[in-house]
Amino acid sequence: MSSEREIQQQLSQMQGQGFDAEAQQRQEAQRQEANERRTGILIQLLTPDARERLSRIAIVKPEKSRQVEDLIIRAAQTGQLSEKVDENKLISLLEQLNEKTKKTTITMKRRTIEDDD
Image 1 (spheres, rainbow, N blue to C red):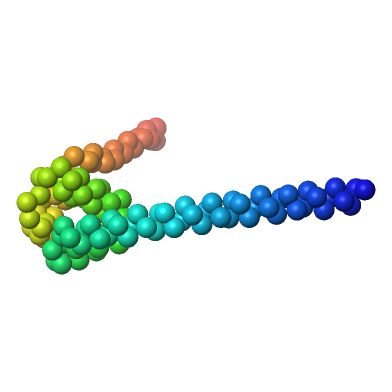
Image 2: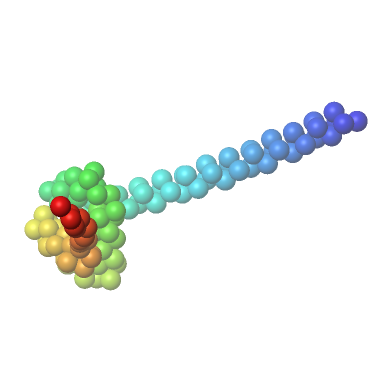
C-alpha cells in the first residue's frame, strides 16, 4: 500500500514539473519574441552607425543601453521622431541620460591617530 502511495506521489510530482517546464518554455518564447520585435523596431529607427554604437554600449553597460532603447522607442511611438536617429543624436541622448542620473561620490574620512610620544 505504501509503495502505491509513493508511486502516486511521484507521478503527480512529475506531472506538476512537466506543467512548470511548459510554462517556462512559453514564457521564454514570449520573451524571445518581444526581443525580436524590439530589435526590428530599433533597426527601423536607428542608422547603422547608431546601431553599432548602441551595441557597443550594450556590451559594457546593458542597463544604459536598455534605457536609451526605451527612450528612442517611446519617442517614436509618441511621434517625436521625424527621421532615423543618427550617431550624433544618439550621443546627445546619452549625454542627457548621464545628466539625469545621479553621480556617485565617495568621501573618505580618515581617522587620525594621536601619538603621545
